[in-house]
Length: 297
Ligand code: HEC
Image (cartoon, rainbow, N blue to C red; front, side, top):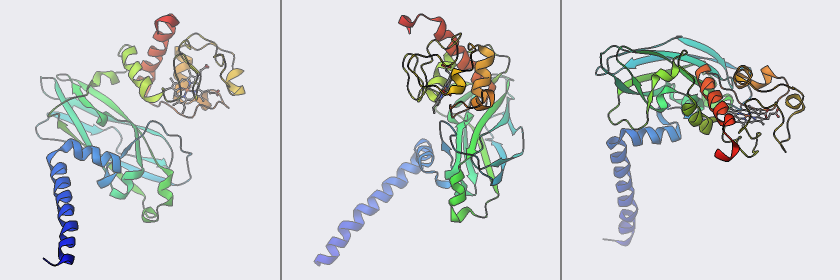
C-alpha cells in the first residue's frame, strides 16, 4: 500500500473503532447514556445543581409540564400545575402527583427531557424526584416537589433569542435495577421530622458552606439550635444577622431557610430551600446535632 494511504487508514481505523465503541456503550447502557446526557445537556437533558445563586433577570419564559408512565408501571402521574411563568434566574418550586394504583409496593425511576433541546443546558434542577429510584407503597399517593431555575445565560445565547416556551417532560418507568431507593412518603406533610434524611440533605445542600464544628464560607452550625443568631466564635457575620438578637428555634430556622434575606433583610446567605418537607428534615437534623455533646459529634 502506498505510504499516504497507509497513514490514512492509521487515522480512520482508530476513529471508526472509537465511534463503534461509543455507540456500543451508549446503546448498551441506559444508565451510561443518562450520565453522559446529564453531564452535557445533550438531547434536552437538564443540569443538576446545588443552588440558585444567579440574579433574577427581566426576561421571562413559560415552562410547561408533561408526564407519562410506562405501560408496565401502574402509577397515575400528573403535574399539579400545567405551566408556570418564570424569570430567568428565578428559583421556582412546582409539584407532581403520583399514585400507585396496584396493591404492591412499586419502585419507579423518572427520565426527563426538555424541549426545545437547546434549552436543556440552561435548565437547572436543584431538587427532583428524578434523581433517585422512588418507592410508592400499595395504593399510596405522593406530591413530589421539583425545585428549578432557568440560567440567565440563556439570554446571551443567540440561538435562543426566540425562546418563550420550554416543555419539561417526565416519564416514570419501573426501576429495573434500583440502587438508590428513596421512599416517596418523605414528601408527606404530616410525616414526623426525619433527622437521618436531614443529615443527607445537609451534606448535599449546606456542607459546601457549613461545617458542624468549623467555620467555612458560612458559620459552624453544630450547636445552632437554641444558640443566639450571629454568635459562632470567629465568624464574620453581616451586621444584620449579628444584630438580630434572637435564638434559633424550629419556626425561625424554617423561615430563615425558606428565604434568608426576606426573613432578615441584609443577611448574606445566598441560597434558599423552597420545599417545606426538606426544611423540616434539615431543621430536625440541626436540632439533633445541637442536642448532642460536641465531643460526640
Ligand atoms: C453558598 C453558601 C451557603 C450555603 C450553601 C448555605 N449557607 Fe447558611 N449561611 C451562609 C452564610 C454566608 C451565612 C452568614 C450570613 C450572614 O452573616 O448574614 C449563613 C448563615 C446560616 C445560619 C445562621 C447561623 C448563625 O450562627 O446565626 C444558618 C442557621 C444557616 N446558615 C443554615 C444553613 C443551612 C441549613 C443550609 C443548607 C440548607 C445552608 N445554611 C446553606 C452561607 C451558606
